[in-house]
Length: 187
Ligand SMILES: [Mg+2]
Image (cartoon, rainbow, N blue to C red):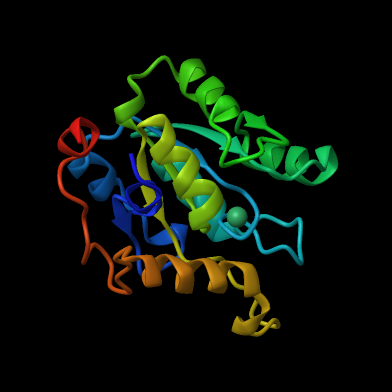
């Protein structure tokens, strides 16, 4: 499988993770979500979990199993965030490596195609999820309102490079859904 198809998210949300609704999860027949942490759930500038995120987790855990899988090595940061959300977590995942994602999917005891990798980065989250055969969802980074948009240079570069390679990234919610995953895996 090519790098291009591995960088292509199955679903591109035009908003943050808070715009991922139970209806979208049900429509895609997903039973589990592996969530990236930094910039997906919490801005890098804080450890505090927002009230909105807590509500989102409580709503979503009724329809899908949830795990946090982060590349961050900080036990105190990721552990505290996971504890405040009451979710299991894995640190130091080294995405795009598949190894720790696989561990989370196995812990859910679900077929890999029924689990989505949800994250803000193409070259870590989306690439790792696609390499494992998961459904992949790209979200907009959670922004700290006091920090400018230009403060995500790596993410912005990845988006630019991926689009230059031919990856389709819509800025409208659910405007783009990749053709059937099983079809893709047969290529
Ligand atoms: Mg991230």
